[in-house]
Image (cartoon, rainbow, N blue to C red; front, side):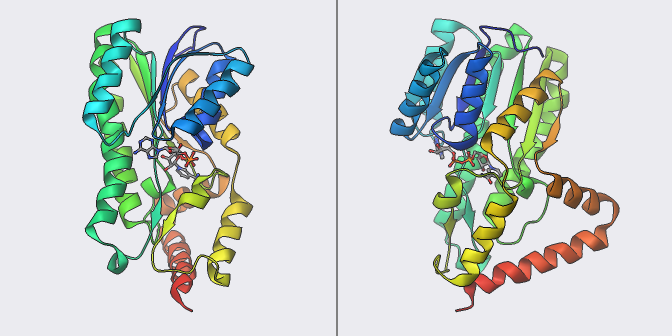
Length: 278
Ligand SMILES: NC(=O)c1ccc[n+]([C@@H]2O[C@H](COP(=O)([O-])OP(=O)(O)OC[C@H]3O[C@@H](n4cnc5c(N)ncnc54)[C@H](O)[C@@H]3O)[C@@H](O)[C@H]2O)c1
């Protein structure tokens, strides 16, 4: 869909990283913004950056997307004052890397509640009004871990694969209502997530962990680039967007040269396992 000036765009996780960059990019094209995050300070910073460039934030609200009640209260207020959204961007997320034997139930729950239930709450609360309006676009921010069995990503991959599957179903179910769907699968992106990612049972200062973080940084693209790709995908009605060239190759190998993909994942697995060696 064409993003018109005044388009109503809601972005979750707008306090930081990809969400903040996307909010700023949307503001530059004249969208009316509805921004949320659980980090109130970061969210206010995003809003002041937007007002510095002359953008319009109609509502900013601090809450946790794992609470259906909070998402619903926000959606009711938004619908009451402004009507249906044009674009919903389910972006908020957390990362946790671990081997399954090191994970407690709370680790699974936290990641799946945020990265899968969070977007489902957004879909439950906002899509019915968009369906009534018979127009709009839904963007779900998944991950490379939503397309590949990335080692150490058990809970994260479970949620992100779920989000890819959900997006694919909605792509077809929402066509009849003139609503487009995009699923974004970033590779490494240089955002504060690299500092907040929880890595269980490792010493973050050890040489092997630092080497892996260094590899991540070497391959990372900017959140501004991801924001450009999100906007391009909405405008050109693209479904699956893989943001990094290395991940496009990996996904190609998975589908067409599985043995090469398998060898690469085994190598990544051995490299990540070294994080636990003291
Ligand atoms: N950075 C990467 O390399 C990368 C790679 C693949 C996918 N992603 C995905 O991109 C999305 C954005 O991540 P980012 O890299 O910009 O990270 P980020 O940490 O910079 O931003 C994520 C934002 O989501 C918010 N958030 C987290 N849990 C929340 C909750 N329960 N309720 C409300 N807000 C919550 C955080 O406060 C933060 O502001 C995430 O879904 C992440 O999984 C990131």
